[in-house]
Length: 335
Ligand code: NAD
Ligand code: WQD
Image (cartoon, rainbow, N blue to C red):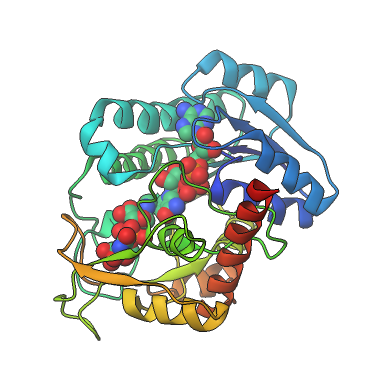
């Protein structure tokens, strides 16, 4: 298939490009590089020895999208392009609503015009809000506490309504849990700008000496050791989940949790990282981060049943691969 991957230069997008290329698909990337660089695209071509056609465009630019669709016969789209920092979305709600919602609407519009009927959307476990774990796809989404989460819930609703009105349109709404890790080559991975918001990139930066110590946000949650529990999933497993969703897409709207089904606490993740990489991660317990929920992990039986997909990597592999990538980046900077 010819697959248009918006946001394909970003963290999850580029790993998915590698997985698609390895399965024989042709990949066209559209990215404005607001949170990535062309370097990841070059590295993905190096890993796979295959070509990626890429366009430096903004997905909120309808003319630019039109131009791609008129130059290529697109068979399906995977829409990763979006802004994703929860805290920033509270400060810049209009930027988030505009970027994340308008991009989804325009991409769907151009797909319909060009009879492109396969649409995979990057949603998030954040749409579940705080409810009983494990989260299952039949739970009603709850209002989230931030504009970022709202953009995911709204995009899901918009795509659902479009699919209802257009019976040949097929949509897969993929609710990711917590992606971490990197391609085993160490060439591509998560490289956030500035101070990381998420746990794993913070841990790897403490490991590299870039940050002094990790702040653990609260140890008074109702969990195994009081720290927050999440369902961490290796980014390559997540990438494979997209390929499976694309290969198995049928008309209508399909929602899938992409996680491992296993919960890991912050302290457990620190310990796993230390053991996997024989390093020490200094940390201190601080107050809870506003908006954080106690536990989030997935019921993954639907993806297993309908997509024949399950996550394969364990926490040790996630920690090893995350560190390999960060360590490589640091070595390159030193040289
Ligand atoms: P990322 O920031 O690394 O990748 C997003 C990419 O989209 C970047 O390359 C960025 O430059 C591009 N982009 C943003 N707005 C654009 C626009 N208007 N036009 C063109 N390109 C644009 O983020 P990621 O972690 O790879 O996340 C990918 C998607 O998955 C996002 O939609 C995110 O909300 C969603 N998601 C991420 C996580 C996570 O923890 N990483 C969890 C759940 C859902
Ligand atoms: C994980 C755990 C923190 C940093 C966020 C978004 C979500 C999704 C993924 C896109 C929590 C704790 C973290 C730190 C810590 N993104 N923590 N110290 O909050 O589950 O999800 O990213 O859709 O929408 O909300 O991920 O990695 O930030 O936190 O103790 O420095 O680590 O409290 O328990 P989160 P995270």
